[in-house]
Image (cartoon, rainbow, N blue to C red; front, side, top):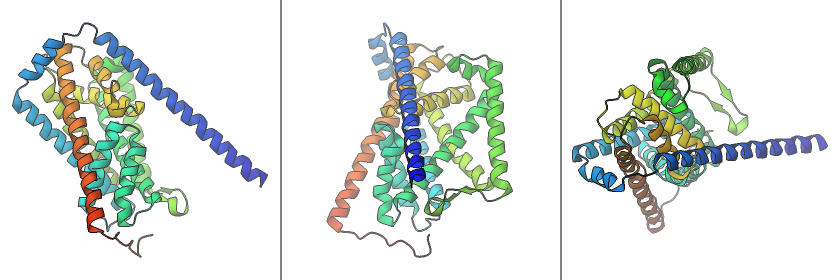
Length: 333
């Protein structure tokens, strides 16, 4: 009994220490980002920012909005893929799309996406018989899809245009190319690992089987498509001069996204923007600020408002219709 108690206490203590490390890392990233923003935005010409926003060609704004809509459409396949991975075949795509869009839109803006998005998912999927352990599995698989896509884009990009990564992390190009090669080796190793034999971990109800190599390739494509559409939107909103290679822009965008994700700041506020301003320092800063403001409006604020309306409408419908939860299939473990 004492041995079990000691192990439990050790596990809790370890978790608390890692939580403190995570909080310290997030606070450090946010503090550095805001310091960079303060330095970069000193003497910002606000009237020029407003003029740039007013002069933005409407076709570029519409194109960026369509690209972001496509990106959110791609995000729905994160949940759809995860549901199939855990065997929840009875949940239709429309529910996966609703849960994905609302959880990501709200989670992106509130921060701590895993917790806030997980709560939204639980509220929606529990109606379809999914339990808390199933939501945890879905969050794991969607997170795996996110990281596989980012690792692929970042690895290929850092090998192809290491100078783009150097603009953000200030490492020499040869070091970034080496990091890119290492990332691709890790990716190849993981694909080989899941291909050689069925891989699973956990125990009892918490056990989850990893997708095989063919399904992992599908995961990677889903993750790449999401990043591609977001990078397209950003390319339409930043200044057209000087010209920048699309792959280089994608690498900088992924860096900014990962920094924002690691900070857990609501909407990656300040962190994403600082990374983009540093990585794209060759552009006029007033024009860049205008582009980043439009990107925030289209990617964060508008979907957030739509997601709140959708969640509210669903709750109202459930209350008025008194719909009964869907029974959990007997064949599903």
